[in-house]
Length: 235
Image (cartoon, rainbow, N blue to C red; front, side, top):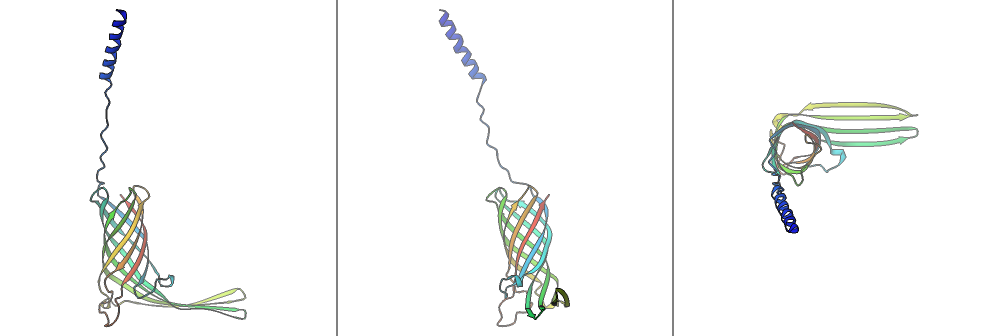
């Protein structure tokens, strides 16, 4: 009889404990779209003209700077319009010589640079394979502001370890009437968010519009080509 009462007591206790300790299954965390974020960006440009071969001698160093707004469309896709001050152009090394006669070394270098300043509005569609890394593509609309052509010649003479340098420079403003004010380009790039606010971005811009207002008959289109590398900060 005692064993019977003991068994009933143990069974009742187990049933009570089972009722009090219910297993709670947590609901899966729902990832929501990120909010719209504003930011700033700036960096360097390395540009040349389509008629030139890609080389270090043809690269014109410039910069870009402006503002952006990142508009999430879904968890993986977002739209990013930007407004940038964008410096493009090209450089040509016309001649470069290095001649040594006896104890005297003479180096000469002549180069020609074209600087063209634009207000550019890229409209990038970004896709994120991972949380921090993204690839992007989209059109870039630009308006020509002003520009300058400049030439530089340098002669360096070294004798007995002493170097003297002579430089001659000249420049002139680009005639706006000769330039196509509007420019359409296509941008391809990638980026990485170092932190929640700070990111790094690389982009290649291929212009699709002839930069000349009147294209001479029988000539190939003259377009911009540019590589961009910069930082962005989202608030």
